[in-house]
Length: 120
Image (spheres, helix red, strand yellow):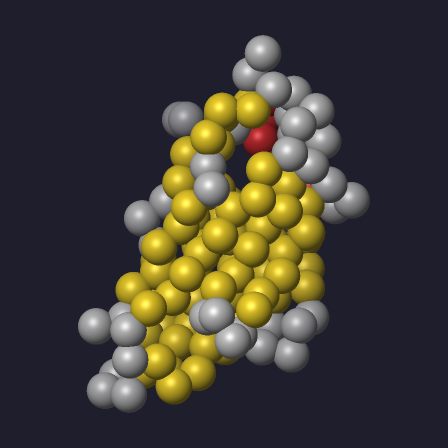
């Protein structure tokens, strides 16, 4: 069974920084496109950033220049470095990935989410 587990969330003051991690585990052959999403209270889940297997990245306009998505394929882990955090960044952050496992393909696999709260 392949799964994604996020970590690194917490409470941070406005202007602060956090780094989220998304670790894939299980019998994995390869990981393709990966992405971070977030869902604020009372709102729909929305895309934050994406990264391809080749390292190409995209960002939603509201986080450009403040967030950096990266991945370490040796560790089967994706990261989201967040800086200059604002209260409106408060949300549950989810990772999503397309993974080829030894026994099955996992397209659009989701983690359980990690809560980020930006507040003074």
